[in-house]
Amino acid sequence: MTEQTMFSFSQLEKRYSVSKETLARAAKRGDIVTVRLAGRVMVPVAEVFRIDLAGFGHGRKSNKQAAQ
Image (tube, rainbow, N blue to C red; front, top):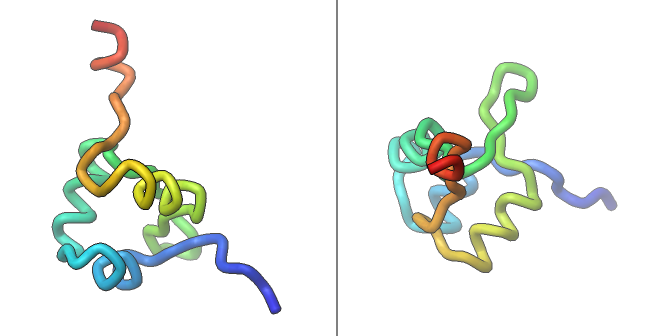
């Protein structure tokens, strides 16, 4: 049996009770890490664990914000 290493926005919208649009906006802001895999936007399992611990909406600071 293999472990899941990536999550789709569809899986995360159910997991966190948010819309795909909310996830897409968060990704665009840099609040969640995404990767493209076979043309799909996916979220690595490590990022899902981080969101589980920190809560959704407590994203990462961008390089611009960290420099200030």
